[in-house]
Length: 598
Ligand code: GDP
Ligand code: MG
Image 1 (spheres, helix red, strand yellow):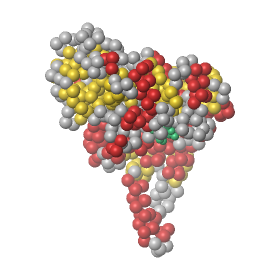
Image 2 (cartoon, protein in one colour):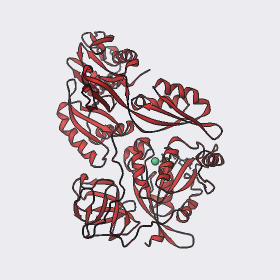
Image 3 (cartoon, rainbow, N blue to C red):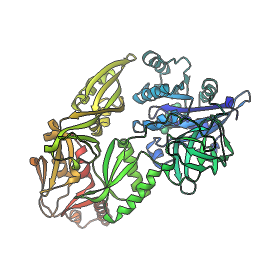
Image 4 (cartoon, rainbow, N blue to C red):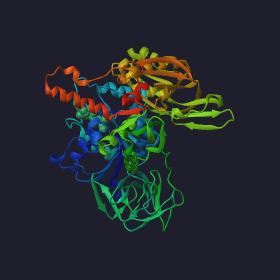
């Protein structure tokens, strides 16, 4: 395709505003997918993505579009994830495009991630096409959304399109707008090759499949490529474009998007963000890459059965091949035995990995409460990172403890400003600004400790705003806080996997809540089990699980056999997630109790 007939674009949106549905319609209209074989949300390939209705791993697809006048165009659509945990993947896909469809739900208006994604797209100099979606809904108010965009964001929204991705209304205009408004790629076709690796995945037959955007020059099958970061050379065995399955091609020219296969055996051979050039005629400078994703949240993953440790190791290695943001290292816990400390981009990322380990690899896991990465400055002036609360050094040797903060942006209807400010205050937030976005909605900005966001912050925000507030946040550096280690003793023995780092002023309350919660979730045993919370060896709260012989069947008074069987099965199910701490059986929920605050 000549570059004049090529367009690279992405779709950005707040979650649930209809990005995947619109992508489906574009695939359908361009005949990329046979409508009879069309399942909903074609680009969301992972089962989990479909179930949870979120896009995790971005995908690329090539659309052949014929304009009404008969002229043919190639439109490369690069899908982006819509959740705050994955904003670094959004940034990657933006670097491969010249334009973005900014999808906004006409019944909801601008949300926190609408703004976050819009600003990212503007930073990448993309042409923005506002798409007001869901105009079929009775409470849709597209004019209001357009006013919001113009008045509070300062975006020229005069060319905004009114669309229903559900009924297909307005979708043809979207295709026309992409051709007319998104500029064709610019890079010089004769220059030495420079292609940006914006994603990769591991295929057991082909090795690493690198997704590239050719910026300058051209790439042909049989070429020897060089990865500029690692300096390693590989021979290109296959090139392909996405339709959405891979279809082989002989060449990828400047401006094109496609996949490169070159017998790369290890994902580290070809890092996302690296620049591909030709060994025979290398480019002088690599393209600007991006910061590798940094895990913000860590937790311990332990197999329920100790023998499954090696299986867990293999499963993590497999998942990491397609998810460079996942990190892990072996760790041992006195209470839980051998497991791994794993790092994630955020809570959703963590849940997804846990779920995949259990579902795809059939592992039964005990997970410890997620923790942020603390920085501990010792009296001697050395700084160490602490990813596991149990590893906090002796307080006598600590000069200060620093914790990560985020800059949070919250959009809300004005009637919820009060309750939301209260919530942020309770969570040790520092107020930054309050501005109005349109007549009834406000944008609040706060600096908050990341650890407080992990404590069901999002759920609280939703419940205090009847579901109307939305949240986006970005990392905002480390600051010193007054923090202490809260230890838990069960049956008089400290349980390392239950310790937490908490703010000093909240330590007593948290200790009390935690022991109460543990008393509720630890089943009665044949003996009495004391549960204590302690700070620096001093017990601050105590509860007791009273002794009781718990015979499930005794409740059934003879009666119904199926009911008995159900109870037994339920008991067995519960057992699977039990971990023996000494002679006390502790269920999975106990390890999450520290997160359940009331
Ligand atoms: P994404 O999170 O941005 O990818 O959003 P989805 O495409 O998954 O859509 C979220 C929900 O909105 C789904 O239930 C869709 O069926 C629905 N939806 C998407 N577009 C429209 C539309 O134009 N009209 C209506 N009524 N619903 C829509
Ligand atoms: Mg989606």
